[in-house]
Image (cartoon, rainbow, N blue to C red; front, side, top):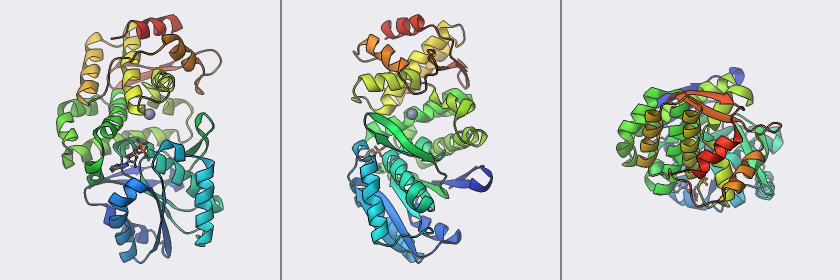
Length: 359
Ligand code: ADP
Ligand code: ZN
């Protein structure tokens, strides 16, 4: 098992990454001084696979466990679903000290995290991410939210978990496309912050896809460590944290214009290639680095070519992104693999050119 500490003064916590960890969540939670009732929030798919092992460990540690489940899917990330969960929490007399354990992918992490942040002004939260995306990215950093209308993550709060437990065994049942989705964020993290991690991923991607435990532990913990570094420096967004948006300026736009026909990670993969090309065109990133990035993204089973989308619409979507300030589109570009910078000085005509001449 590997441990990564997220240093946020009194909100500090530990991320534990390894094999066979689900049954240990109960004893660990007990060690933090909690007892009594514990609530697992999960989706129907994940419940069938993993709620048993988690809940058994909790019961053995003396907790009185309630499992609340919702159907899988982003459509569930709403205030209405949160409302139903509050209703259930009150009906079982959940208290201020009742921990909520979010067992599932990013949707469950965001939604259960939001419920934990708001129910009785906040109850203890434990994240138990079961997708690679959630293990490397969304379970770390304390962002919780639900969607509102057409807007993703519109209503939310920063709320830190007491603990994050990433059991790599859960990835065995994850569909390939979901695995690749998570790998996109891992590659992104490496591309902006660590050439070593990037090379490690590049050299071990087949092993990772074959679910080699030590390779997964290494990739997830290195990612968690880097993300922890970013979020401890800058708990509430602002400047430094924005480098995590590499691949996301174009990625979000492509994702939106595809009417979410592309998975987030697929859109980010396409976005990373476009933004690497832009980095090259403005005289920063070497061509050979762009090629290497494309190679690794490809080996991860992710798309690198822009799908047949209306480039005009993609440009419009980019201008309407909530991260746009004034008229300028903000980009995270690369000087080299492992070295990112933020700029709003990119000429939109260049962006359009790169997107049009894509592939
Ligand atoms: P993401 O982390 O990509 O945001 P979601 O929460 O949307 O993920 O989950 C994606 C899908 O994968 C959901 O249908 C969820 O039920 C399913 N899922 C989550 N974890 C696992 C797992 N370990 N094995 C199989 N399916 C899983
Ligand atoms: Zn992302």
